[in-house]
Image (tube, rainbow, N blue to C red; front, side, top):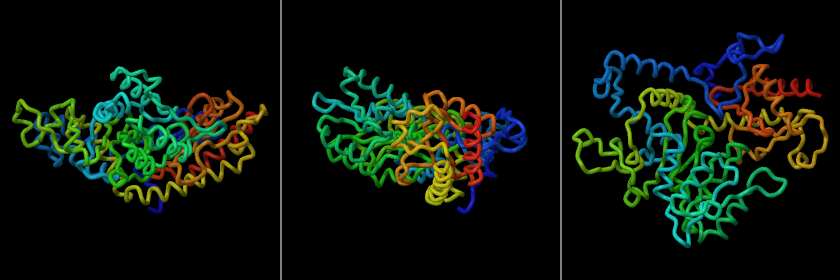
Length: 436
């Protein structure tokens, strides 16, 4: 793929997002959207499919379940989605289900795979995992009568560092392995943008007799995944970030096929029942083989249509191999521009910096193999970040802030361009110039 598919997306104009600086930006020009790591933009394909389903709802009503004018019967709508999701995460179709929401799916998976014993009860995770994950870990421990302070084993970077070292994770698994029931990390860390070495962590955890699961919220649609080949036990993800399926869109989960006989759904629902007899309403639950047996309710068709539209664009782009190549180009270009700034401070110097003048460093790993599209900028001194973020927005550069001092910039390869990277860097320099 030689260029972005930006024409496939509806991006807001500067006027629409309230960019107010004068004389720039042009109010009718498209903003510089570097926030696809938080919420992907609307694709024209998704918009068209949602509008189409609304029309089917209005003209067919209940008959749309079994007699859909466009061949997408609602009763098996997700059959159009599952092959694309499976390809995106590197799994077999029966290992993937389009269902639910991220944290609800995480609880379902942990309820099946977190089986603490007096000897093996710990959950190994990042100290700064996304809060929803941390809440889930603590509540699962409590549900088993355990003290989260003892059951949840959190890992932090070394002093003066911002990301976890692979050797430290593997050493911890080796040292604590006999007491670890579950290893559960993010594929890509939401705050730092670190892409964890998923294959080596999975292999190390399983060698110690631990289950290994993954939260792929910031990894799916961002980095190449091979869940089946890596042998991951389970994974969960949302679809509103890099997958561009819309705010709060339907999520997904993966369960490796090795568990299809031994880990059957504990919380059965009608939609997880064998489709061949689902509408016969039998009294006994007969789960679909694999991940789709964990489904509970029929999916929301409007959000599923939005997801289908976005996945069709991924398929048209060639899925993750060409997108990864473009992502490396864009993120590398943005990094190069940022590190040439007179306000840039190398990360190893940032923690010791005493100056009151504005500056920033990049806490995302410099190694391209250890990151996706996101670069996390740490601003100095404390309190500067919010001023920078507000000023960037006023100049039409949409970024994402994380308190207290981080701005995240993500040149997503489906719709961002080198011009976006250049514009983001130029406007950041202008904002910092105005703060000096």
